Image: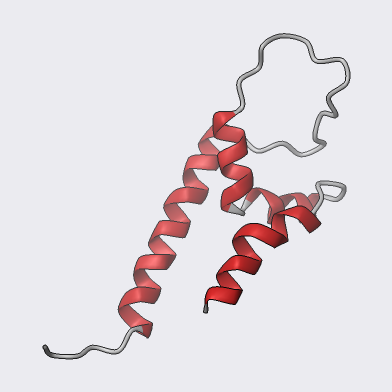
Length: 85
């Protein structure tokens, strides 16, 4: 399970681009990119920065975090075996 988590949260965002709309949707649904969008502060004009073709919105970033938290809670309840102590 740790390997899948590492793959999805750390490695997958490095390989998914925003070149096409469907890959941008995948990229925008990952927590790393949502975090990058939420902490991004524009300090004026950056002439050497590439502007993404399909950027994430701030509200979309919060939705991504809410959905990931909800999915994690559901998976915890469904997958983890219940034991009486």
